[in-house]
Length: 48
Image 1 (cartoon, rainbow, N blue to C red):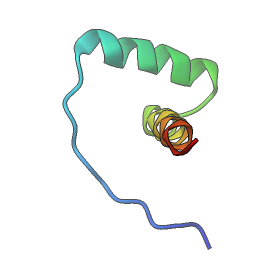
Image 2: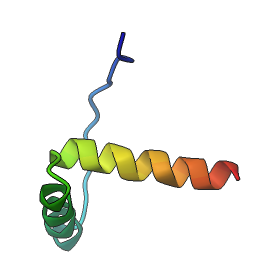
Image 3: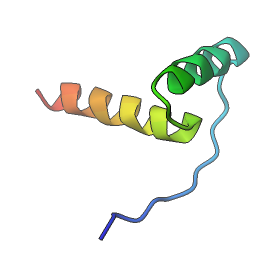
Image 4: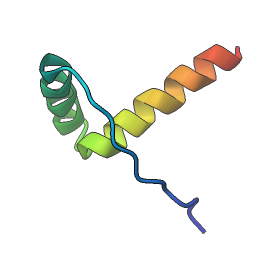
């Protein structure tokens, strides 16, 4: 069973959002999926 997701609202700079949208599309993912991947990778780095 997939872990539950929690909806959150954040405010990002417009240029950041536009770049993230392009990167997400390049990976064939939604913006939220891509941001989730980035956050997970960052948190994993912090644990090292």
